[in-house]
Length: 112
Image 1 (cartoon, rainbow, N blue to C red):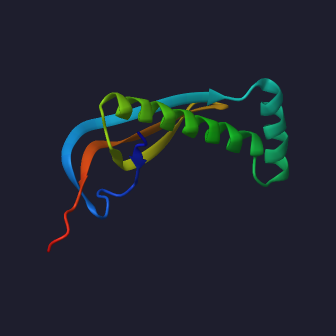
Image 2 (tube, one colour; image 1 turned 120 degrees about the horizontal axis):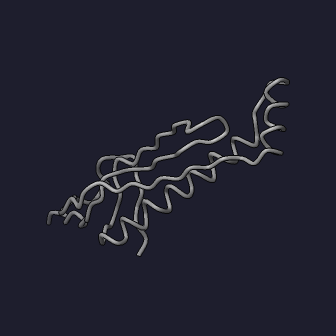
């Protein structure tokens, strides 16, 4: 069963029938020394630091996957109000936290 992820607080055409709580997923990523040196050189020249862009993308994907695992375990239909937070753990490493409210939904009935 696919779980809907949304930054919205409600899903059009559905109503929340049960709030199951908050779920979260976290991932800490660091680049290895060789890529860190490349990133340092890029920062001197300006422009996007691709090594860190990729590191944060991987961390977001892992945090989201972990959040979804917890939501599935709870029997959720959706995770609403999804947010992401980033924190630097130490130079060259960052934690990404994904979190949201786990709910069960039911379709709204059309009025006759």
